[in-house]
View 1 (tube, rainbow, N blue to C red):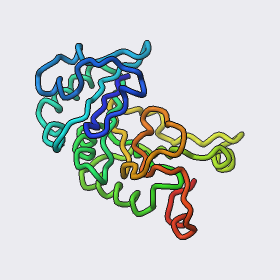
View 2: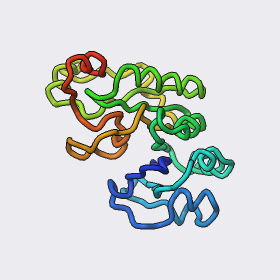
View 3: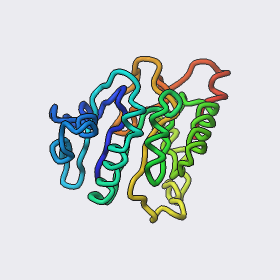
View 4: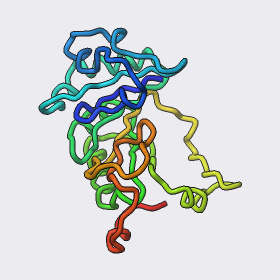
Amino acid sequence: VLVLEADLRRPKLARYFGLEPKPDLRSVLIGHASLDDAVQPVDRNLDVLRSAPMSGDPSALLNSEPMADLLATVRMRYDIVLVDVPPLLSDAAGALVASQTDGCVLVVRYGRTTTGELGDALGVLASASVRLLGTIMTMVPRRARIRDAGGPGGHPAAPADAARVPNSAAVGAPAAPSLPMTVPTPTPMQHNGAGASAGVTSSEKQQDVLHP
């Protein structure tokens, strides 16, 4: 498995995984480093290609021929490629990258992502002809997870096509955090949640946020 970080505005995988300051995605795309030099193994079956903060608009770089060639190369080299893309509603690069993969896993945040944001994000994916593989809801309180588990014995039921695993998938969120984090640091691939607070205080707002 390769995790490829395509969020060039707010990259976080180096911190999450404790990666060394080796060449990053941009270095590979502009020809300053090879893929082998940039990829870092973090486990026996898991490699990471990190990014570094980039000034300016990264869309041109992420929608370039070198990016397409890189995705084709890693598709052949790895069984599964997860591409961490920028928030869909604040950065056009997210949909551009997602359109080059087999599909997208949309990340939404419990108690923060609004139904409007979710609808807008789905519209962005549809406009880019991106296949939606599924949705991950992050920061769900423990009580809600227990209460709303849907399958036998409290386990969620698996989708009918769960066995059909794509070779490459983009992982993205509708919007980026707008406030400082007030909850424990999430695990990798959860950092692009649409909000920064795990809950809301306005009852009117609660009617418009996503809950299981």
